[in-house]
Length: 259
Image 1 (cartoon, rainbow, N blue to C red):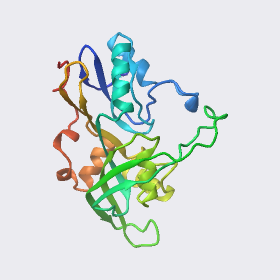
Image 2 (image 1 turned 45 degrees about the vertical axis):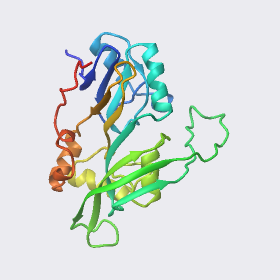
Image 3 (image 1 turned 90 degrees about the vertical axis):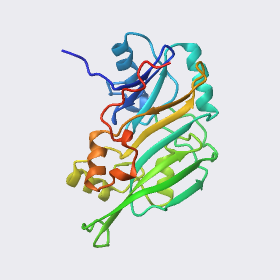
Image 4 (image 1 turned 180 degrees about the vertical axis):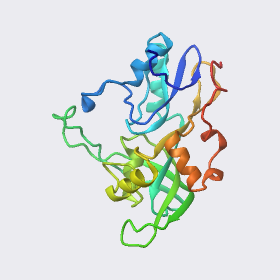
């Protein structure tokens, strides 16, 4: 039986990037001790060589995930991410009509994990900055809360810092939680999307990642199209003109095997 194949959106002799599906861990973790599927091992088996993770995406978040193909490149890419010499772009579907534009500078305290951070001291708030743009909105004739209609927004998110769950927590802070966020969202809206639209995932995707390639010294733009769940919501709400067409394509092959 053929093993599950990941969608490779970029590959050269130093880097490989995939469109990580929602629900897939990057690598083994004590947080999900019973999970058996990991992007790192799946990709290693798929391309037949070891890969080095250089950043992470939350398990429920889909989108661009980059691996280095040797330890030296992993160190170079690690510096790019740690110093934030890059531009990350996410898209989310949130509750309510989000601000048209907002640059949010709101420090957050790192969330400690009960398994891996048992001996850690309570951390201090760390700077966290995210820029938000409302791309589209919709009003639906369903009374989820106390109003006869329920409103939702399509939001582009540009994190300027890289704190854990930063986008999810910042959107919760401004009272526009992401649909499908079990920890930071609202259960009644999450259940509504599950039942009405068969949307059973966190509606947050890392759609673009841009940085200067450490070896080729070229501007590299990696694009991960939205999955079926998010794409069908974009179509249902008539939001397709609000997004670049490449974010809605089923496959992105133009960057494969490029120098």
